[in-house]
Length: 127
Image (cartoon, rainbow, N blue to C red; front, side, top):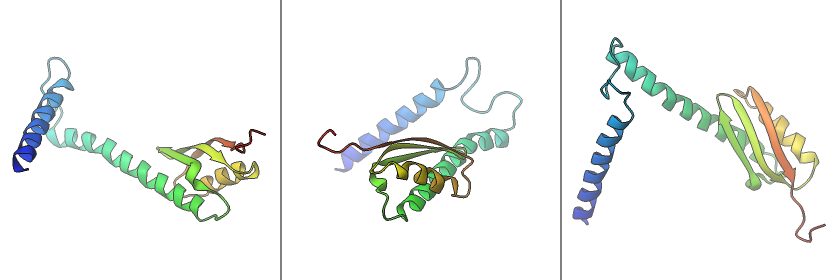
């Protein structure tokens, strides 16, 4: 078991080393570009991670707000958040819930816009 873990760690290290060189621009090393201090490069690398964390947190807040409404089945709704813009995809059981879910999402602090792509779920009978 320890051998497998050691091999996996070694492979992951090799992949990480190879990918850091693959992403650098021609004529530059994998470290900070010429003329840019190392601290500045570290901050710019951390910015996308913080943005992703903020998007995930906003997504969870929208899900929680939708989940508080017991009559709405949030299991068939997906929420995508990017920089405050929220996109709703999936299905709801009633046409009135489409606008209701959008209003709930708009009421969450941090949401700047809502794109509503929700549809009404058709019954299994096909009617």
